[in-house]
Length: 275
Ligand code: UTP
Image 1 (tube, rainbow, N blue to C red):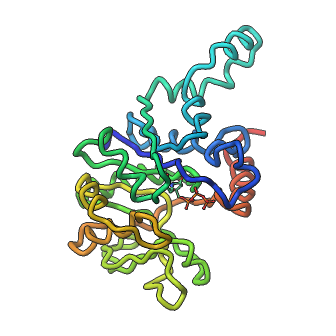
Image 2 (image 1 turned 30 degrees about the horizontal axis):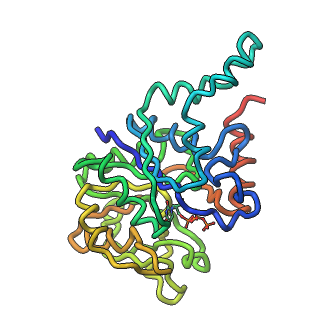
C-alpha cells in the first residue's frame, strides 16, 4: 500500500495570469470544485491517506480549503446547503493533510525533494493537480499506477502521446514497450526541441516514485531553465531500468493552459454531473 501523495503546488501559474494573480492555479474551479480537490480525491481513490502539499507563500487558500471554516458552517447550518461541503469534509476525515513550504521555486524536482521529511523511506505518489485526470470506465489514473508499481516494484511515470510540435512542453521518454502501454524507460529529455525528442511520449503530472529518488534529487544540478528537474533525477533510475512509463487509461486535461481548462470544464460538466 502506498500511503503518501505529494502535491507540488508552489509554482506561480504564470501561464494563467491574471486569473492566478491572487488565486492559486490549483484553486481554480472546474465546474464547482477546485482542481486540487479532484487531485486529492484521486489520491484517496488510489488508497493513499497522507497528503503532503509543497506550497509557496501567498497560496494558503489551498490549505484553508482542507480546513474547517466554522463561520461558514454556522452561517449555512439548517439552510439545506450543508451537503455542498460533504465531499471536502469527507476528504478531510479520510486523510492527514501536511504542508511544507518550498522557500524558493527551484523547480519540480526540488519541490518533490522538500517532501522527504513527510514521506520517509517508502514509495509515494505525486500529483500535479493542474493536470486533471479522469477515467470514466475504471480505476483512477493514480490507482492504475499503484497497481503497476506493485507488479514492477519501481518508479512509474504516466505518459501520453502528444502531437510532435508539443513535445517542447514536456519531459519526453524513450523506451521499449514491454507490453501494451507499458514501457521500460531508457532515456528522458526535459522539454526537448522537436528534432531532439526521442519520441512523442510525454510525461504528465502523475508519478509513483521510490524513495531513493530523494538522494538522486539532492545530487541533481539545475538543468533546463535553471531548475532542478525531476526528469534529470529519474534519468538516473532509468539508466538502471528502474522506471516504467505507463500509457494510462482515461483522459488528461492540462488545466494550466486556457484550452485544457475549458475542455476540462466542458468534459466534467457533461460527464460527472447530473443535470
Ligand atoms: P509548472 O511548470 O506548471 O509551473 O509546474 P507553474 O508555475 O505551476 O505554472 P506556469 O508554467 O508558470 O504557468 C509544474 C508543477 O510543479 C509545481 C507547480 O506548482 C506545478 O504543480 N512546482 C514547480 C513547484 O511546486 N515548485 C517549483 O519550483 C516549480
